[in-house]
Length: 365
Image 1 (tube, rainbow, N blue to C red):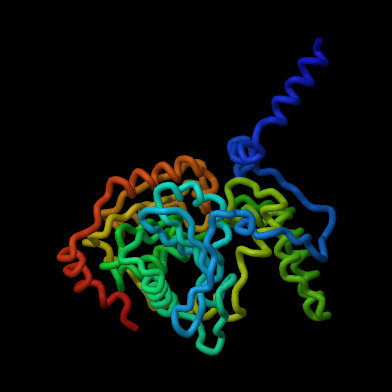
Image 2 (cartoon, rainbow, N blue to C red):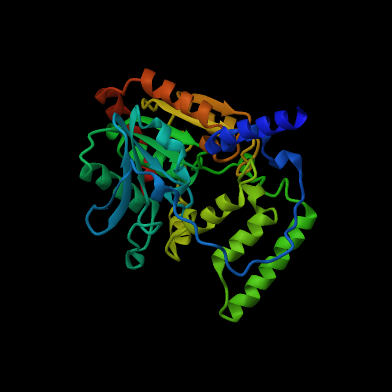
């Protein structure tokens, strides 16, 4: 009898959709568990896995010629358009999958890779700047024949989104800032990314780095394998709340950080003079800020300091999220976003014009 019950339990378990099991984040290991895991081996290569977007049949994929370069773009769904701006500088659209597909019933979701990253054109001869990225984004809007859209900026993408909002506020229905770069300096923003990495893990990662340097001298360096090895040995704790699976780590190093060699350096340099303190004091654009309690990219006080620079914004706080809130608490994230976009109305042309007259100074070089 007991054996039959046990078999029945196993059968029931096997009928649960795999996606449901993956979504039960509360049962997964987190950085707060302080588990130390040292991998026995150092891998010289990693297996190839398909891009997540390869298996999403609803995506309309294309390379959009915006004049002078082509941007890789994916579109799914119907309704008010939302443009997703990824982080970095140098990340790609890949980590937005599959999380934003849930919104396609209410919104047209637009994914894209910035110039010099992912599947978009690389143009090293012209260099890369945040100003260029803003103009590329505006040309993409025009090319897609979208009059106005909701702008979602994640991490560094939040900096790009804020810059775009200052330059082209008349084209924005709402501004969504998730784990956003604040675009001004403060001691309260000091990173905590090493907080949960143990001494043993640091020593192991140092050994992996030394091997990588030796491989580089010998012309044998596999950068993706190096990133995978350090991720396995604790580096995942820098920007994740929940421990990623090995497959997630592999996809991350294969597809989430692919860019032209000078991209990060060039864009970071182009941002050094920017200081948006006070820029959004009277911003009329409906704005929603998403912050995760466990986001170690910034200091503990970052959310309140950043919110103070957007006094008119709505604020959503996620207690069980790190940097990728849309992945860590997807149901709450989607519900919060949809409630906001459903209830908010676009700003008047008069209020936009008045605000724009006061903000041009923030983006002058």
